Image (cartoon, rainbow, N blue to C red):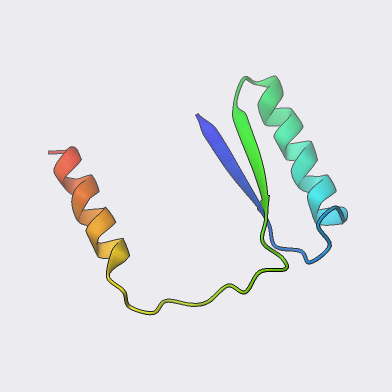
Length: 65
């Protein structure tokens, strides 16, 4: 299993990063792989109704049948 930790703070190594690092350390100690991704300085847009999510959901349903 791998856990993705998303840092939304514009301060890449600020308090949010420190908190996520503590979570990552705890998970790593339990044998769970982690990755921290910083997106705080990137523009994040809302849904543009591209249909991608519907394709992913349909594909997942086909895999569970």
